[in-house]
Image 1 (spheres, rainbow, N blue to C red):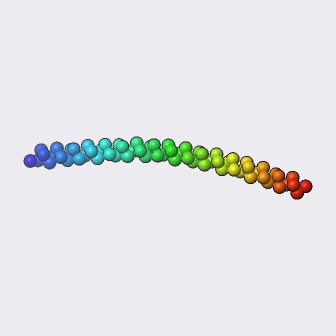
Image 2 (cartoon, one colour; image 1 turned 60 degrees about the vertical axis):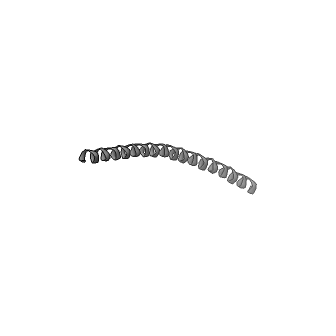
Image 3 (cartoon, rainbow, N blue to C red; image 1 turned 180 degrees about the vertical axis):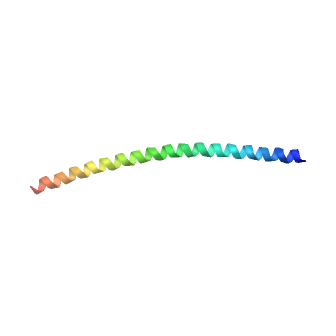
Length: 64
């Protein structure tokens, strides 16, 4: 009887360990995606700032 309980416990622990490892991989992948999105956002913001700067120069030259 106790050996059956230990076998069941061991099986559940193995299952939990596998699940934790899977979740860690998913977290790692999600962090990589997040980092890529943050870089993309920063690039987009920089491009928008450049465009706004061009509009500002047009406004300045139109006022002259």
